[in-house]
Image (cartoon, rainbow, N blue to C red; front, side, top):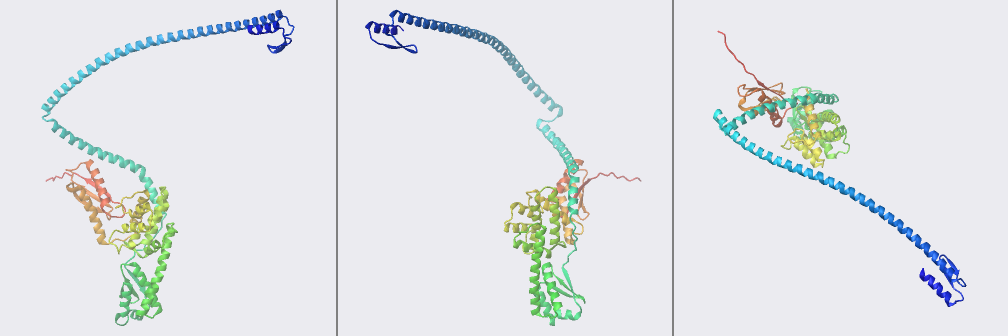
Length: 506
């Protein structure tokens, strides 16, 4: 400010004719203005500015003082809190030191007590060995025997509890599902035999069939592979063969020959050729019927022909085609009830016995052949397992496989469904009895298979077994029969332990 005033004064003193200065926000003409006025104005402005600066400085000083006071107050409060917290920490440290000392003392006391207990235990062990007359090892062996006996009792109790609980929950539901599945199937079977009869009008026709010196009958038997029986009845001719397909071809051929009347080796060969063509068409139709029953319209033509031959194969007098239809229906009903894959179950039921069509050519179990056929046609592994595991000698890997096994067992065990030869019946009964003897050994006195092998009664020695052991023995016998024997339906195992005291009054 002083510099401005000095500049103005210098210009005025120099006598300049004209000067213009910017003073504040205005431009003023300083020409002919007295120096006193200029100085007075400048001094006034300067005084105002100085006053304003002083006021601002005072306000800043007051604000600073207030902030310092406030910070000092906060510092004092924080210091007081820290002092209080330090006091508390010191108190806790003192308490921890006291507790630590107490724990050290208690630890020493515990160690002393443990030493005393070890000494007392050694004394008691010595005294017990003297009183009992047994060493530690002998006592241990005796205790282990008692524990094993108790565990056998406990195992039997657990088995009874588990079986009771399972029966309470599952028996009614299982019966309901099985009965419902069987009620949905209505299939009647007529027992097949190894002979087929063809009716003829009179003995003249029979003579033409025999031919001169038996040439016609020999040609017929050679071409068809069946035995012709002409002596049983004057109005019928019997055809005998273990192969139902051969018998059917022979029956159709002979019927054609009898209807035509011209019987000689040439006509016999022609009739057999036509019969084979007709049977081939019939086989395809049978395969289509079975495929439709299983809901499998896109089945491979090779499989279609194989399953079509089931009509001409039998098992225990039961036709495979009728058996397979029944198994498909039972399996589908069971799969629906159990929320399983119905489509897979029906396909597995369709092919589970297809190996029997080729079993006379291969010396392996039919269900293994069925599995090989399924693999040959590139079927899914899960489906293959369900097909070949239906006799449980191969481990089932899915619930669908177990359903196929159950459906097959229901169909085969149904009264009147199958016939069984005397030799096979005896072999099966003996196998079931021997399976029980393998498990029981010397404990078993007698074994009786009754009710056509559906119930097994095992008489055990009451002196070498107790009531708990017979429960375990029954379970082991049932498991061994299930693993080693083939049988329709179920085998109920009853283990009987009976003590008798007999005296004679004289």
